[in-house]
Amino acid sequence: MRHHQFSVAIIGAGLGGIGMAMKLRASGEGSLVVLEREAALGGVWRANTYPGCAYDAPSHLYWYAFDQVPDWSRVYARQPEILRTLQETAARHDVVRFIRYNSMVTGLIWDDSRGIWHIHVQNAPAITARVVVTATGQLSQPSFAGIPGRETFKGSGTRFEFAPARPSSSSAQAPSA
Ligand SMILES: Cc1cc2nc3c(=O)[nH]c(=O)nc-3n(C[C@H](O)[C@H](O)[C@H](O)COP(=O)(O)OP(=O)(O)OC[C@H]3O[C@@H](n4cnc5c(N)ncnc54)[C@H](O)[C@@H]3O)c2cc1C
Image (cartoon, rainbow, N blue to C red; front, side, top):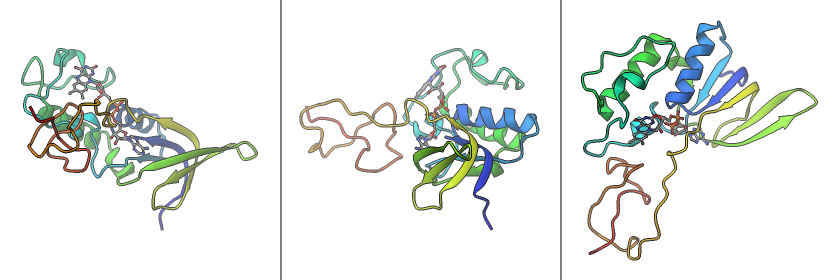
């Protein structure tokens, strides 16, 4: 039977949420869940697959201070290597098994009398936690500029946050010339 009560619930399995889970595991926390709305970890580094997607800061400056520095193959590592490194790091720190995928958090309600959070998850029973960490990022939600003709454009295109590999009504569309 699935547990529904945790000490800590983390929302989001991007770099932030995975990092938090790693630190909690290292401190001995075992009552932990990471709620991720997508079917895989990685956050922006899973969502962005456009050609040339890469760090814009030097690779050796971009990683967890408490983890070993990855042996990056380039000064500005590219998205596939970043995602692979994050997947391997999450596995090495034994946090993958705490992630619940396809778990979109839709609401948080604080219960003052019991000192717990009620966490509402789309199409799943609510769960509770003493502590909630929101690691939902800032670039995981598409935001389209008001470009005239975008909705009716039939050609292909690409955009920053979500790459063509993620087909949906919000996927790559560009205005006609
Ligand atoms: C192309 C690109 C290049 C970048 N380069 C750099 C760089 O060089 N240096 C730098 O410092 N930063 C860079 N960034 C910024 C990057 O966003 C952060 O560095 C970092 O990866 C953000 O991690 P995060 O975990 O905070 O958020 P995210 O990676 O956005 O992860 C958030 C996760 O939360 C999940 N989520 C959101 N809402 C919910 C919900 N309601 N329920 C459940 N799950 C939810 C999302 O699906 C996602 O998996 C770059 C970003 C992009 C897109």
